[in-house]
Image (tube, rainbow, N blue to C red; front, side, top):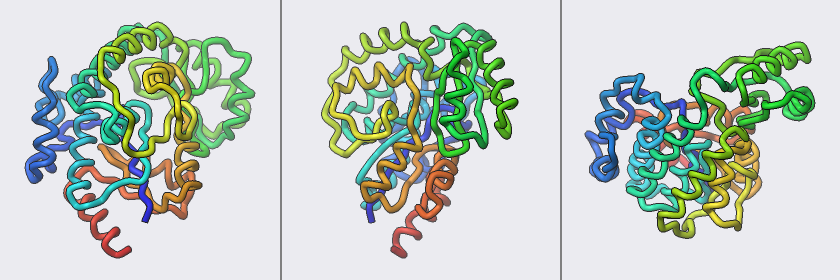
Length: 304
């Protein structure tokens, strides 16, 4: 069976994530014990406090570490992907799993990425909102004449996220509701991720990435910036990724079209599993972030 590993993005984090697997699996402990940066990643993951874990510059290294620990536990059972992808921050987890980054380097990079994103977006000036039950092309048409707002995420059919300056997002939200959107929900995020407002941050991120050795991924990666595989320079891809739309459901469709028969969501939460189900109900998806959910995956694959 062809598998796609999909890695969770920011917002999925919770206090205690990864702790159960850390306590039971040596391969998980190895990952957490390699997370040596200016914060105690293991302590923040396992103990919080929640407000610290939710800060962008803490959430990103903590999510990457937890996701890689889960992936290594799954791998210890002889389960490997044919494709990998991730939602926003999760793309770094996917690339690290595929061998593009050394774990220690990846943790340091996303720590800095989180800092740059926080610094670039002053608190209270930018925002994001999820638009439900409206076709993507219709959303694009409604917002095209509104300055400082754009689409951040194509999560799945019926769930598109807009991003930009706070007033622009509020104006777009009203117009989208008038145009027939079922709901437009403001998101609890620290700023306008995946927007052109991160242009300066993208240049600073590029300078950061150039400090590290980056390797050719050993597993096919499907990228946020296009929803398909890319041949370009990885630094250029990631420089663009931070400020560009995330084509996630297009990434799922690409992997399905290339033979993926089931997905494994790696990391806390089940958001990506919901996106898979809304993209193609016929494709099984298994979300793994605990012993119980790991056993469900192992049981399901054993039956195949």
